[in-house]
Image: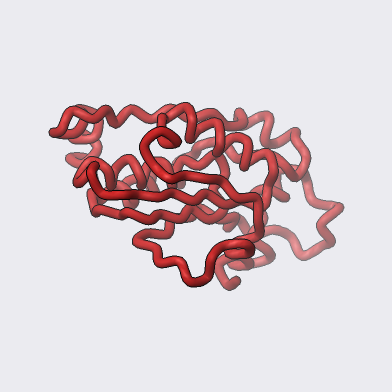
Length: 174
């Protein structure tokens, strides 16, 4: 992965820029905001980026629980380094309306809207998506932090955004 990141930092061989910029909540804001917080970019995000940047040509990418959209946008940019002429699409989904706004802004900020058929959908996992659509790559960094077993209104605001149930597996099971 370190060699891959070095290649990405230098740009692709065809001269395409691989610079990515992202806006999201600050760590302190995600602790204070209601359940609509958009989690900041953390170490888990960066580890997952190394997995999505494997250089495979992924023409149709889906990012579930996209948050600010970093996983999907990064996977799309990495796949375009291999064969930029391949027709590509990127769908970002999140149940959080604020996340949809951040992801849409990040698509524009990274010029993905100009280069791909890209859109963001506010939904719960696969709801509203074409079940017959073929995908080349699905990326996700879903809520996985285990939370206490008491009722949701008693949770601290930050636990709404990262809560994966009492064992951290709620969304993964679905």
